[in-house]
Image (cartoon, helix red, strand yellow):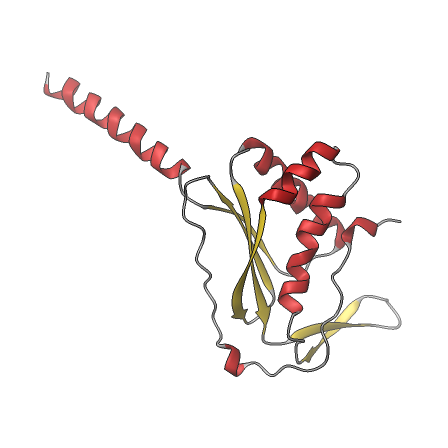
Length: 175
């Protein structure tokens, strides 16, 4: 009898634990700058996760980097073989993050209804600064608390240079 009661309590507790987990913000992806094809694959993941949770919002927490990395190509092999560090532009992280809703809401391979639903679901949050540019993608249920940014570097330790570059437009990857 004790085992039966214990089993019943365990099942109820487990059900409440699973239910509570679905009402919390969930990190679905995290990445820095990506090549075009990798970016598209991750956007498809976001689209699918969004469709599976129609009442959830998509929070894009973006972080600027301490430096902007530029890859130098080897003239013989045409492959990157050196990294040159330059001071970042003030809005590098934001411009990188803007490419996410731009892609998700304009990519013509997605039906118009999906693109329109995504427009209302995506929220950009400035996360501050980390060593490298980074983006976190969070799926946040209707009544859940939004994610809290976790910066690693204070802005006063970042030296900015130049004007921000434009938003990368990944909808033109293969055109």
